[in-house]
Image 1 (tube, helix red, strand yellow):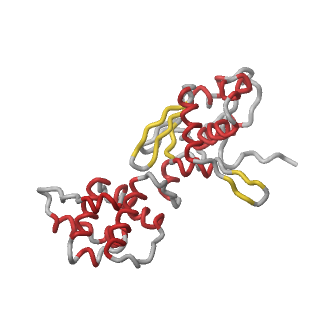
Image 2 (cartoon, rainbow, N blue to C red):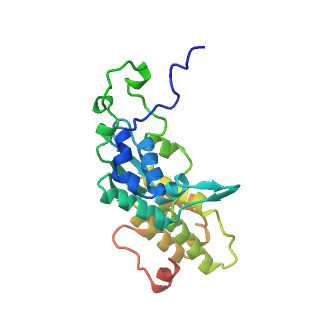
Length: 251
């Protein structure tokens, strides 16, 4: 029986010298996280991400680092994830850059890792699948856009969704608690698709909460997005709304 000619989903290369690298002296969690990053990184430049880069969040890395103990799912803490990527950065294996949507991780020396010519004995016969670069379905920002995201509690999307709910609760303590992740996704669309800045969205939220009419009508981020232009026009663009102490306490 002939072997399957192509491996679905693409591939990455792994050097035997990894056994002698600093990575082997790190925690198993850091080891796992680093290879998850390599598997997720762009194989080629695409959109705003370059070859060897990926967009992610701490919550997504926690999920990637999860494991099962029997039927119980365990996740590393946020601090453990931070320790892992900070250790990788200190070892000059990656760099990180924060964005409003999470962080961009750059795999240093990615070209060297993922070029067949960087490895000894690379001239021996190889199936065409190992010599022709293939795009992995996990390697683009497009996947991040299309899939349902989980927003970390320190992201702008999550924070602004919580802010709106907290201000609603100040007026009506019995208001039903929403799905904050679902609310955060509408904020994400406002930022990513509509081109609104998180700072401006916050100003609109706080202004609407103080307005006698709009405070009764903006009861979700979906409604906020729908009425955003009307709210912004009503606010006017000459001055920023005053932020009072009560509002700050709600954050």
